Length: 273
Image (cartoon, rainbow, N blue to C red; front, top):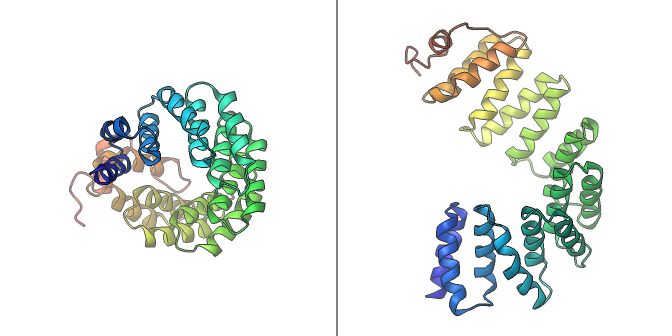
């Protein structure tokens, strides 16, 4: 019964039903106070409900029972979310210093440092993690994102190209690469990357909208408008986004009335698929 309840809690957590996940985890912990999986679900559920401070004490007790880098990393995150950033970052540094390395601790630490504006330190943390796990694609992607935030597009592109070559079926990598290519004015390359990503995830409307921007900047007005019509088809709430894209691109269109944009893009039902 306890195993079944735990599976229900995990399922609720993955579905972002945080209150339900918390309720089930609490029922397990009443009879098994040291149940590690239930504690993990409980703490994640509290963080998901912006109640991180309530997770700190049980996590601290669990960490005292023995070395557990996953619990320690979660404790660091809970401390940071509880407005105890200094304590949280200190905990994450301690966990990241452990060997063998627990890579999520590096990622959490880098994320918290970046949030506090310490981009240089955040980049150094991920670089250290990559020396310990040089073939880790997720770390390469993290580093590229941090470099992009630091406006170092050359390094960001280098890491993204390496990540793409190592994991060609990852649309998230292709989308990040396309963003760098677009910012560098390489619109044809960016369009190619967006198309590749859409081939893997055809229903991604945001990526299709970005593709439309690339096509518009390349002077392919018809292609851009076709992409935007696909974006708004059946999704009238995205009309303002599509109209904005048409207005800001160098080869786009501007409409004074939303109804005119809706008619042009077929969001009013006048155009058929």
